[in-house]
Image (tube, rainbow, N blue to C red; front, side, top):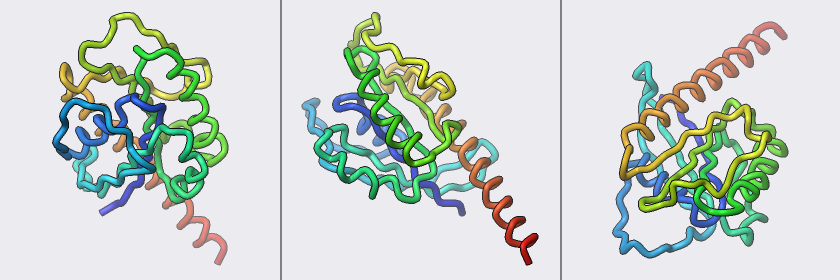
Length: 184
């Protein structure tokens, strides 16, 4: 079974933990109060791609607090993909997301094809978006999510993303094996 490490990153109060818990089928007693993630939470679960291939998933729910930025290089080690989460109802979340993009995509050489953006709308949110992503993100699929109103859609989009990510990892592994065989 393949193993995949996916970082879930974005600004504070974007909904990273809610999305991560939902995708991992993890439940935490929640009083509805906001409790910021300290550093990182790692959720491990089994999933399947669209072709029914089994995958061991590690979702790394990364704190949006800038005080943890010195830890980012350790978190990025051996990362296969990145899920960007932001709340389009919050002003400046779009600009905060660029900082995450610059570090995890540009500086860590993670391909844009290994990324996805969840524009996560919280229950009772505004109909008018206050954050609009820049052209920096034009090559990354952006999916609008709302767990309460359309959780099945979020699961399907995650499965599609996982399928794409696994295909890219398989192709890369095959290329490395061919390279080794050709250099003998």
